[in-house]
Picture 1: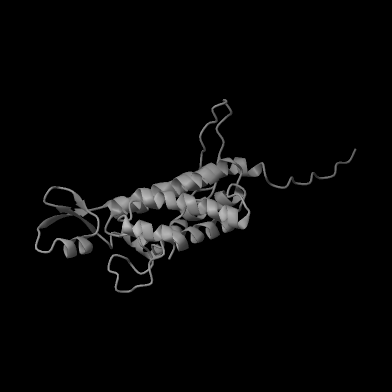
Picture 2: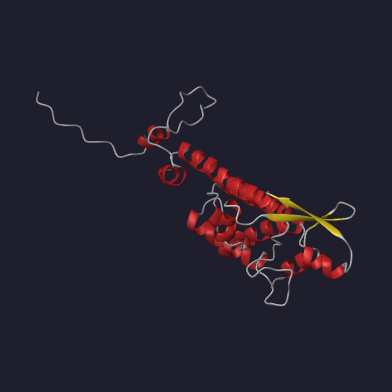
Length: 233
């Protein structure tokens, strides 16, 4: 495990530590591979996310460490932490012009896709834990070890479900923006994943006054021109 990840563990895995380490290893990837993330394709972007995961979120190889799930150092019982990391992931995708997806977030964090979809389907109703002073307890198991016999309270939360909804909604926003830029692949994914109907997706009017256009009209700009029939003169 890297020294950076060790530092994150020692400092209670704060949001600030995680976010700075994500940015750090993104730039280290660029230096090591001699590429710029602005220029790489979506497949190579997945490689970047997996590189960051290995250095930031991959847990210590110690099955007795109860603070970690099997695939990630992130505490699943701390939805505020997950939400902050999710926001950082979404911002990176917009910054570098890459697709937002549940699969991408999973590659970055190590949180299984099935777990995220379970949050969406309400199969996992999470609790938020508070000490008697009203402060959130991010890791209840670890807190119990250090505060044996102390009382706490718990409250049922939909925070995990909200994270799924955010990823899903931002993906559609991302695909819409890419379609506006003429990305045919994004248009196809929108039809398959989001149920966009032929001609029904109306994209926002450009600020320069151009007429509103559907996604299919935009896509037609990038199609091969049809050969005109021969005319008799």
